[in-house]
Image 1: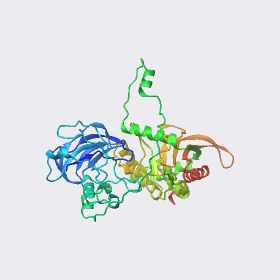
Image 2: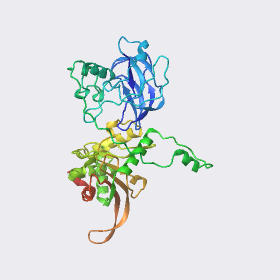
Image 3: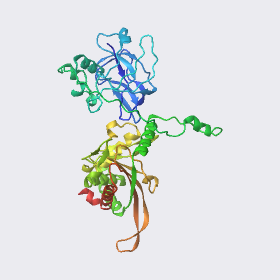
Length: 435
């Protein structure tokens, strides 16, 4: 029976996307790994691969279609021996047979050759709620053989279960889930402001331009609204004297000039935060709904502004990397972020983040925590200020203001203070970070 390819969920926050363009046409034969389409998520434009072989029988959603919901049928693929005459019998993958990728939908008019597609059910999950990724053919075979997809390890792209994984598997009935109590009725969502038409009436007769929200701006709005409504923020502020760091940085950059390496102050801040998390490991934590997860490595997210929004690419194992390695990796991530070429795994994760507006002349500010992070460090500009020296004399120094926004569910005041103190000590004694 022909199988529908569904709009994939290509990022953790993706609910809908734009099917930018098809890279195949009806009648094309595809194999596992062949590129099918380019899909714009809320964060990037990504290529969508075939997982099984077959022939593209019908394209249901045209290239350029916006607002295609995850798990919406976007095309029909024919297996060997099937023809276009079978398309009316196309099967939407059920909980035992998932799409070539999990995905959103689009509004495609039903033709006389195609029966109207029913709304695709939710993708199957394991007992602990994790989503199972499997190709349509693999799910169909699993359903026929009575296999529990949750017990099978996938060998396809990103761990997706493909035909070969289930073809030789020993058939055993999938465990029946225990009866779940009826969910409690949900409270209506809190209002987010006046409706669009109400706001528009306020500005009748005034000239304005209406800016359509793209996927990224919708996601930023939703996540930051969630953060301010659900995360109990508190703020810790410190000033850092940067003169020693600036002199040390100039010395290092002179020595690294022949290698084409130029360290920024932000590179030192990333390293300082990474080492501080190792010094104060209880601060290396995230909120996980009904528990706290304490991480072992220092994975640091860094905010990168792009047109229309921002990315927070993550530098993994930052405590183990040299300053020059962190600098090169950060430059690469920032460049690809601005070109919207980051993969989801490159901007998810981490326990804390850094947002630096010092280059814009901002002296200090409070940043909003990006869930599920436990904190975010807001960094201001380094400014020459009068200070009292060690011997009580009045002198000047380059001083930088930092504000640590903290999730009080994860980090208490004293713990947050210890973490921020460790960051300051690393920046004021930069040579220690190389030890």
